[in-house]
Amino acid sequence: MFLVRGDEGYGARRITADLIAGLLARGYRVLAFSLLEGEMTTACNRAGAACEVLSAQSLARPYGQGIGARLRSQVERQRQLRALQESLNAYVARVKPGALIVGLGDLVAAAGKAASRTGARCLWIMHSILSDAYPLALNKRLYRSVIARYGLTPVANSQFTAATLGPSVVPARVLHLGADARQFSPDAATPFPRAAAHIPQNAAVACILGRLVEEKGQARILEALALAGEAASSLHLLICGGPMNTRFAAKLEALAQSVALSGRVHFTGAVTDPVPYLLASDFLISSRLTPEPFGLSIIEAMLLARPVLAHGLGGPAETVSDGETGWLMGPATAEGFRDGLLRALGDRARWPEMGAAARALAHQHYTLEKVLDRFEAILEEAPQCRQGSLLTAMGAML
Image (cartoon, rainbow, N blue to C red; front, side):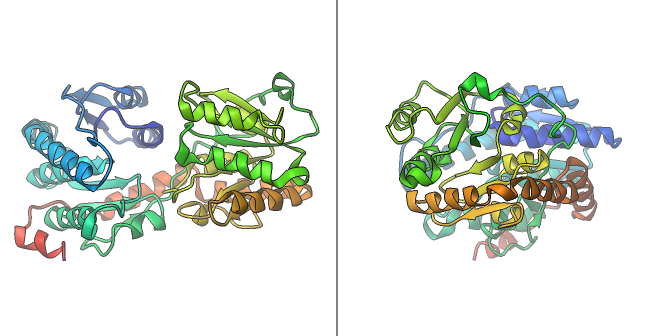
């Protein structure tokens, strides 16, 4: 049984839907319980899970910037979750799942408490890195106390993500994610026509996938490309993502219209299928400025035989083999990203070889079938939940 909030982002929706569909194909009975109606609810239903919706109000968002705002929002979220606990407990008691799988940190305590009432296993899929913004690492201590009290099994999407939890009574298992090798196959779709974007057929083309937000690093890449000057004049960028009606999107468009970049930056807006754009590109750029927990688009590009240029902080350092299947960039500065772009362009003759190596590596480790094999093994090894003492929980916070 999957416990979701209902309004999760793209990455969490994709991963959850893929797990649901894969488990159903392997003969499991899969249910979902959603706090509210949203895109995640739709994704669960489409994947084949019978999804029950509580229709609760959306959980509290941060009230503002700073530690105080974060703490106030967490207090409000916990108040709301306590009110939801009774409904969740009743649902779990009724359907008696063998395992309860939760993806959002907000819901971990509620999931553990509900699972402990029936002795179900409970897995926390850690989609995100745990923040260092809280004083005394309070957030990490609270998560460790919940894990200790109920016997949850944390499952991180990378070694980097797992390390942000710290020393846990139940150590985090690592489940590197994957993509559907049939969907992300070089012959699965027709490439986006370069001529439609006025890109010369012999140009070097790099693709950036993701929402247009500062953290994703699109602006830093444009600054780096301008800084590279004539040495990178053959490179065109396909920037795939939205929304296009924001202040940040306007900033990107202004950068793209500069003399140094004129005619070489192409915006597609939001895309539902990245495959044609990746096939039209020579390599993918993953430019998130902060540590990337995993980077699913990296795996998608690798399956399509495209090498990847990635900021080497976080999960990409575990999936990209530097110099073999792609390149890892240094600091997330214009100079650091410029050096990465020039290194990738310098290897142009090796792109087909590196793409083939990337595809082989992805097929060896990062297909959905490989992920499901590992997930089943973790599921079978996970202990049943039980409600421990508050003393145990408090001890785990030290």
